[in-house]
Image (cartoon, rainbow, N blue to C red; front, top):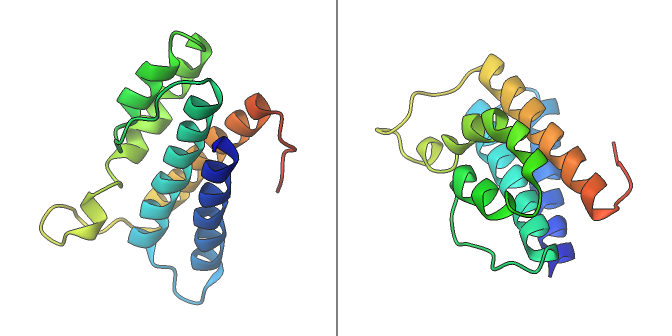
Length: 128
């Protein structure tokens, strides 16, 4: 099942890559799918550690579940917390101001760091 989470995360990543290279980037979708990619990678790690995967978009909860088995992941707290706001907000026009290019670049960088670290921990090749 951990690999299933990775496959779903990579679907989000492929979507992000297409959105980023399109003629007109849609920054709210980029941010949303960056959040989704990072969330699914963390859930893959939770599953691989034999822990119950919580039904949450809250990175604090995911990192808290992983904390006892991997306290080093706490260093991703800031990046993960920054992504948390993109889990729901971009889907509702009255909850969120539209992110711009700077926010989508930051979201992608944060998600890419989390992706690389989780792939390393899962023993997966670092893919571009």
